[in-house]
Length: 296
Image (cartoon, rainbow, N blue to C red; front, side):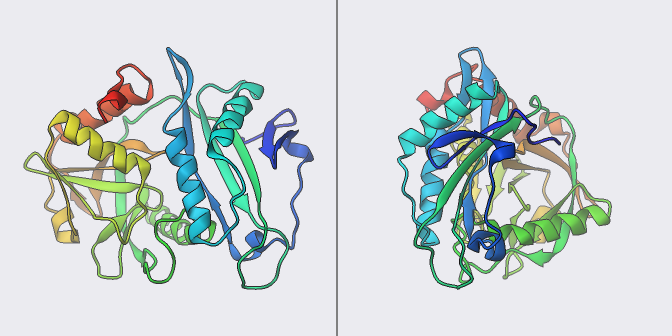
């Protein structure tokens, strides 16, 4: 995937610049220690024009992530939303993935930063798909213990764990990994939350050992709108391998059905599952075809 070219514009510390002209310091604390926070945000080309889905919630979470890691956050959320729409306009992007990143200045110490910078970039994102079912493999890696790092924060350094799990899964022929927590309960995929279906009911792991995904929250709201019974509870591998169906959800993933986990093939046809209903509803929501946000 090409993220930028010689004409790409990004937003950095209050101004718009060409991506090829922007530099970073090789002594940065973020580069050496992963001491940074970020967000993944989607913009959609709707009949009402380009629309950033849940822009405020994403930038509020970015602020919260910085606070949890004691990284200074000097910006107003309203202004960041405004500048992001301007960024899309300057790059002529309608369907896009947006990446804000807050990073820290040069420091070889292990103490909290006294200053920070922000960068927002965006690149073209393909049309909504969701048609291919994924094959997951249970990873030998676990999600970090919540006593070791704030699980609520989208911290850059935490994603080394995700890279390792995904790399392992793909080396074994799977599409993606599924990680367990330190208690051997189901946690999440490297970049997505998981829901399972059994007898028409949906189940998902509770907060605590997982990232509280914004797409996860949207799915929970849609279950209420669609009158789909949902329970948040700790789930075991046995629960997963006795489920009728399952799906992942996330900003980039959107709603992605699962074909199997390890050697277990989900028996329910995807198109007949509750996940498929949520997938169709979510697509209508993000494309602004139906204003479910007046309800949720």
